[in-house]
Image (cartoon, rainbow, N blue to C red; front, top):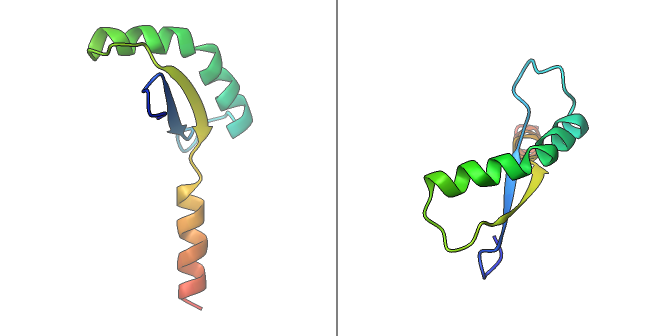
Length: 72
């Protein structure tokens, strides 16, 4: 999130077995951003409705690479 909380990074991954690749999934999520923001504002009391910036979460891949390096 940015310091003023007007923007928030949302790290996401498609579910295992999903037929969407990460690029298509990101496009789909960006298309639904207005609906997601609206639902978010209904559930959470915020002064501003933050701009949601979707990014693919690659932390699992990085952790796997690190584990493989450690186990060598």
